[in-house]
Image 1 (cartoon, rainbow over the protein chains, first blue to last red):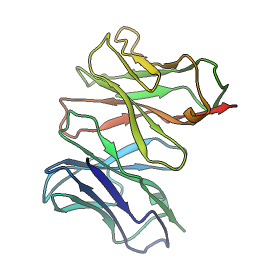
Image 2 (image 1 turned 120 degrees about the vertical axis):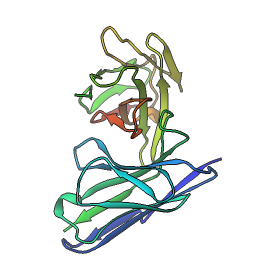
Image 3 (image 1 turned 90 degrees about the vertical axis):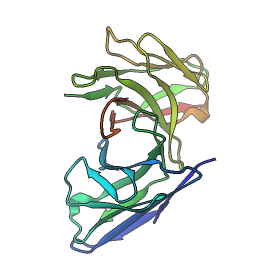
Length: 112
Length: 116
C-alpha cells in the first residue's frame, strides 16, 4: 500500500524567514506529485505539479518554489516568507494526471 | 472559467436523517470533466470518498451517492441516513483528465455536523 508523509506537521515562522516543507511517498514508483495550498476560509489551490524527478511546473505564483530531488520526494520552499503564505499545505500523488489524487496529512503554516 | 460551488456550511442534521450537499460546477475549458467528492474527518487527512468520470453515472461509497448530471452541471452528494461518524468537511472537486497539470478545482468545502 502507498503511504504519503508530510513534514513538519505544523510550523510557526516569522515574516522574512526561510521555509522548507517536505513530502515523501512510499510504495509507488514514478508518481505524479502535487502541492496544494488552502488559506483560512479559502479553497484548495494547486501550486505545483511534477511528473518526474527534477521537473516541476508552477501553476500559481505565490513567491514559492518546489523541487523534486528524488522520485519519492517533493519539497516546497521559499527564502522569505510573507504573511500571505499562512495556511494549510497539502501534498498529493496520483498514478497519472488523469487519475484521482491521494493527499497527505498536511502542514499547518502560521506566519507572524 | 472553471469553478465549483457547493452548499455553504455548516450543515447540521440529526442522526438517521437524510442529507444532501449540493455541488454545481462550471467546466468551460474542460471537455470531459471528472468529478470527485473528498472528505476530511476530524484529525485526519483529505480522503477520496467517490469519483465519477462519465456523465450520467452514479458513484457510491460508505452509503453516500452522487450522480454526474451534465445537463444541470451538478454532482450532489446524498445519504439516506447519516451517522454521527459522518461529521466531517466534504469537498466537491472537478478534474480535467486531458489537462497537463492534473489540477483539481475544489469547492470551499461543506462542514457537516451530525447530532446524536
